[in-house]
Length: 323
Image (cartoon, rainbow, N blue to C red; front, side, top):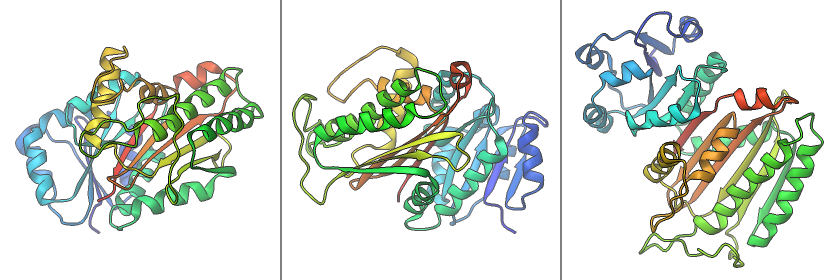
C-alpha cells in the first residue's frame, strides 16, 4: 500500500515511540538519511497529498530551494517533530523551512496520538472540503458545547463572561478561568479588528479597538467552546468571515514574537504577542486558512488543578491551508 506519511529521522531510537508506531502502520514509511543526496533519493514523487515528517537534523539536510522545487511537482505537507522542551525554540524551527505546516513537540506528548492526527490531516487534504470536514468532526465530538454567532463587536464581551463562567465550574487551578478569558479576548478581538482589511493597502479597516464594528449579514464571527470527549481539555474555536490571514504573515508574526518578545507595532500589523501568548498556554493550536473566505483558530487547554502541569505541556501547532 502506498505510504501517505514519510518520516525522515536523523538516528535510530531518537524517537522510539514514533518508530514503534510506524511499525504498525503500512501507510507510514521510515528513513534515516545520512546526507542530502540520500534524502533526495528517498523523497517520493506523487500527485496525491503526502506528508513529509522531519526531525530538525534531517530537515537541515534538505535545501529549502530543493523542497520548494519538488513541492511544485508533488503535493507535500511538511511537518517537524521536535525534541526541545521550550515553545520558543520550537517556533524558531520555522526558520529552517517556512513551509513547515505542522509542529509536533515530542516532550510531554503522545506521539502515537499526534501521528493519528497527521494521518487524518493528510487524508483530509485529498478532499476539497477536507479542512471543514476535520473541524466539523472535532466540533461534533465536543461535550457541553456552547456556540455563539456574533455580528457586533460588543457582543464579544458577553462571550468572555460565558467562557469564564464555564471554565470556573471545571476542576482547575484558580488562574485558569482568567487565562481562558484572555485567550478568548485575543481571538475575538482579532476577528473583529484585525481580520477586516482594506484590499488595496492591506491595513486594518478597524484600527480603533474602542470603536463599534457591525458586520453585514450573512457575515458573522463564530465562537465555539466545549470539552474534549475524555474531559481532559477545553477546546475553543473562533472563525472570522474574512480570510485575510496568510501563512507567511502568521509565521513571521510568531517568529517575531518568539525572538523579540516585545510589542512592535508597525504598518504591517501587530506584534504577534497575543497569538504567541495563546500558543504558550495551549496544548494545541490549529489555524485553518481559507484565503478570502475565512480564518479559523482552534486552541485546546489542559484541564488540571495544578498550574505546573498546565505550564509544562508543550503545544503542537497545525497550519492548514485550504487550496
